[in-house]
Image 1 (cartoon, rainbow over the protein chains, first blue to last red):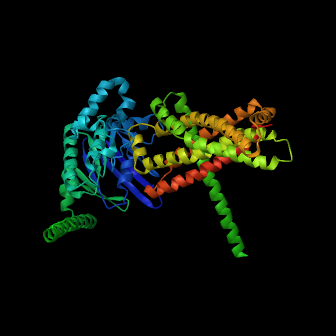
Image 2: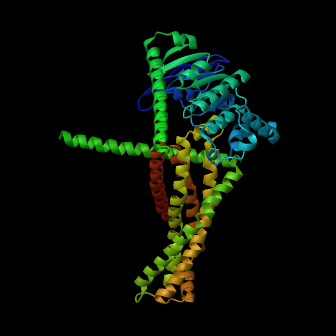
Image 3: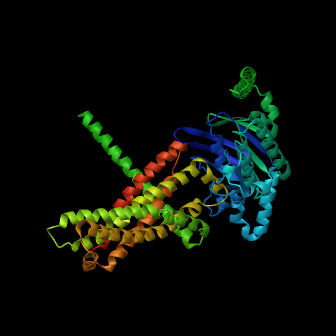
Length: 272
Length: 264
């Protein structure tokens, strides 16, 4: 279980202003909200990547910021973190990137053959062909493949908690849907506790057990997807309407670009 | 009166701010150095990373270091020859060039090249890792950036710098000897006689001590500045510039402290 207790964090301006939240074991929680409202900051406090100015995060009753030596290490071993832009190490190939976490903590216990087997399976679990991608450097992969390798790196250590920071940002709709499907499959297969920070409200509603709206540094709404859809709270409605309008604008922009291209092709025989 | 007080308060605030910033950097650098030393003595530094860094720092820096050393030796020899002609025995030039190169120009010019070629690269590399969340990823995987990034680079710097400075000293002195012959006609025997006349073996040790110190502080500051990087590509550029300035000042301050501490 993950508990956020009255989290405050300010950089130049306040970002989180008293967020309290409990995520039971096995739950998938999505956190949505406008940009700059501290969603990623909240996610990073979960494994101590950012230390809050006030408040505490407890994982299975143990404070992430406890002074007990080794506690942060133990908590980080329990969690897998999927970064917004995958955050793969440029100078390491895919094998080294995915194996890095377990090489540190479990290689002695498991042996190199088992480490290699786990890396192989993790890549298969994210629908990548291990034979093809293992020796490649991150620069040789597409954006979607990098996200999948980042996901494989997060699950290879068989974590109890998975933290996703904008897992579909920057992906085209096909790849975004594929990553959403992967998250769903991994959650169903492993029953891990998941927190997904995202802008993709439709994807979030289809994936999560509960959804939270973070705005102005505070949690303005928390409930099931059905409650979110039904909610008549002004902030929830305003956010959902803004997201829907942005999605419609994006689709119509894409449609008009496509029809412009078709017209150009018809008139000149060349793409513009 | 009020404007004088205002200006005074502003000046004091600026001095206080600068002092606080220096103290904060010093504290963080000392902590990074201590953690790197601990990682080294606990055997937690990957040998492969150390070798890769040592090669990049030592072997790949060699051509530029040698060119700088040759030019330093030639210029010292020519300027010394110009000043000594008709005043003091020319063989003294051998001592001036050799000691100038070994005690000062070899270590300092090599350090400046090292800052530009290695220190700036490390800050840009670690800074890019910071802004692209790769440092966070290292932490999230339960690994330690000090062990992965700082310690191998510091150890490699401490190995590469004495090697580079040793070569720069030899090549710089020889270039000075050749230049002395071609410009003022001072023969090799006379040059070597002058060089031996005032030579102390300790001078070479002193030169290598400087090299060791610079090899320690340049990677240390460059990693520290890289880890402080914020704000995308622009932030990486800013951090790299600040880091180069910081490293040059640190090297020159350390260089200025060496004579009173080690030359008596």
